[in-house]
Image (cartoon, rainbow, N blue to C red; front, side):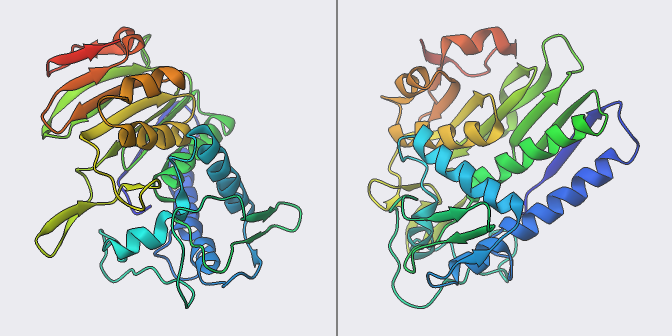
Length: 305
């Protein structure tokens, strides 16, 4: 995950914030593809053998399966070999942290149907030529789990943000909910919108935030499972509000891949609220998002349905 973290609690024990951060450190050590010895690292190097994993990782894998079904396969964590081939082998935050796979060729974007998750034995088995990357869904699920645990531990309410994936649980400080700033991908200094989110999750998928050059060509980390290469979507970013942060993360990617012609239809089909910006700066928003706006959209909204 290796991302910026914000934790806010309403009331609760004095140790709540510290305990939450320790839990996030534990989850990153289990789920990062860049961390040697993590559950994900061991899975990707196991060459088809069953791998003992933590209960949290069983939860992560089951969530991945659910996310793939919810997005009709647009979320596909088996795209990791394609991501590495595109140039994203090392962590953007620390170039010394490098992803390692088992020897031999690997297939990309093949789905999770052949992954065996044994919750009783607490093992996971990947096909020998498949590798996975939790990516953003790991951030979203971690935010969900920690926010919920903070409330269980005595906080009246909690907000957890990991690299922009946000989960809110319990009570909120204002009648309109927690105030969530949506960044303008074309002008990060200023907010595109401020949403009021009482509870649930908010996540953004963007082709702008993680980019690098391959020769003279600029590329990004959003792989389209239908093609196996970086998406050619005309959307710069999509923000989704959903009941859970992991679900918002998965659907933000799914909506982004559809492009501006389909983003609103995708949101309506999956009963989501979404805010999207294309590469020319046009803004698209679902009609149900309007009541959650604390301040008006800064940019002109091209289309509201």
